Image (tube, rainbow, N blue to C red; front, side):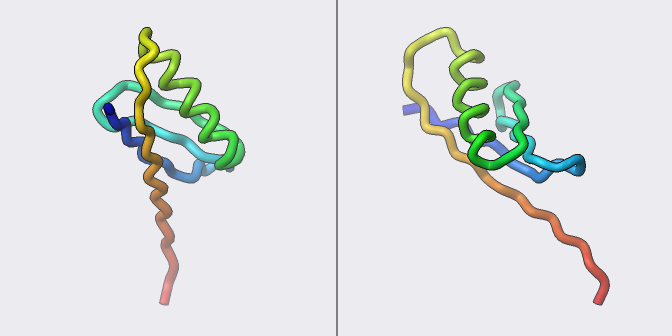
Length: 67
């Protein structure tokens, strides 16, 4: 089964953005739960077949602070 990995980051405007690695798929949503649904829809729209794929969401959180 094919696996598609998405890099997920928090958006500066709020919400989340997801970018697929190796495939040109991008989506965004206000909440993480909405993002999961948006990613599923984006993958189905990108591929014109009924093949099942594993989707991996890799959440990256960058934090900058002074010490």
